[in-house]
Length: 316
Image (cartoon, rainbow, N blue to C red):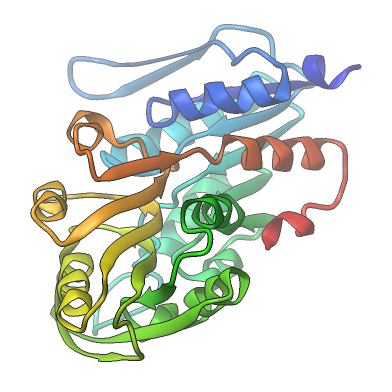
């Protein structure tokens, strides 16, 4: 049976556009799944085509509304399992609850592990995700997990955008140093680190800058942008230390709360994000946001998984 007849790609409500682009890259038509809500909020999923014996891929980021999107994924998986799909792979471009990956205080949950258990128990055979907030979350699953990286997509854009210009990669906290160093190596530029102290959740205070940014274009690199507090404070610190201009890039644009307003009023000229999370109307209206698609990366991963080829070359 040819690949286009054997593979089925479905999507919940969170990633319909991304799933359609993945299907375009694979040369197939997106699967027909009806997802709707009853008046009391319960989710109903109906798979409106035959999936018996098919290898099925469900594209669904567990972004806001996080709980709704997670339940859609679980319910769709159950529907596909009961419809006799041969295998079910959850393609989760953005893995919600990833920041709750350890006990940060007494009597607190490890919700990233709980979500991994829910996905596994629902009947998923494999998970494909992008830039997990903490790589060790892969170990929370009892099934194979492919944690892909958006770095090749972002690096390709940065190389074309800043060709020949004096740039410096900046990590907004010490935890992202390894990621920023890898980017700096590939872009053949220097590295700077911002020492950040977080007093309460979603509140950060920039302390001081390690490295030289004077007379250079500073590019802040992070895995996600949530409320943009850290990002905008970092941008101000960079400008105060002589940076010519400030840009930023991240894989996941969570952009919750006052994020868009902070970005629009900040020193940042442009923020590069991927489409692992849809920007929505508010995000799409900001002239400072530029989106790159990970559809080709995910389509290639799906193709290799289906044809039993190596996926490891996509990890770097």
